[in-house]
Image (tube, rainbow, N blue to C red; front, side, top):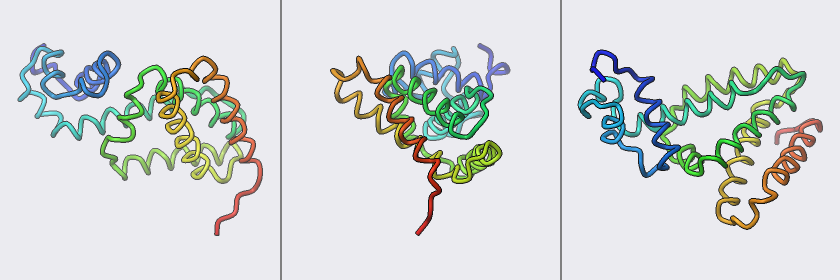
Length: 179
């Protein structure tokens, strides 16, 4: 690939492909450059360092979870679809949850994205959208981490996960109070 055709999106896509094939350990700027047939120095015009690349990857994955949610009629359905999409991705690519946990977080980017989601949840009738969104993310990531440590449970894992997710979401119908 010529340097002129290199951009952040191509770099990101190559890094995500490496994550799916070889896990988080396979992510390095050198490997991304090799996959794109460019020199490592060329990447530095677009990505500051590996931490920035990991942040880009985590942000992209998170936005994909959000974009995957179909049109729904209420906030609980939206969160269910979001949670299932997140669970499927983290279950399919085990190191994805490690990326989400380890990638440096750009607080401003996460907050602006979450603000949009919380506003959407409010429009769909869910007032406590911020707490609900954080709860679903925590459930999914915790669930997939535990599942990976107990592979004998994986046969029924999706069914069990959906059941627990629904229990959490039903609890959102009870008005929450803050202390």
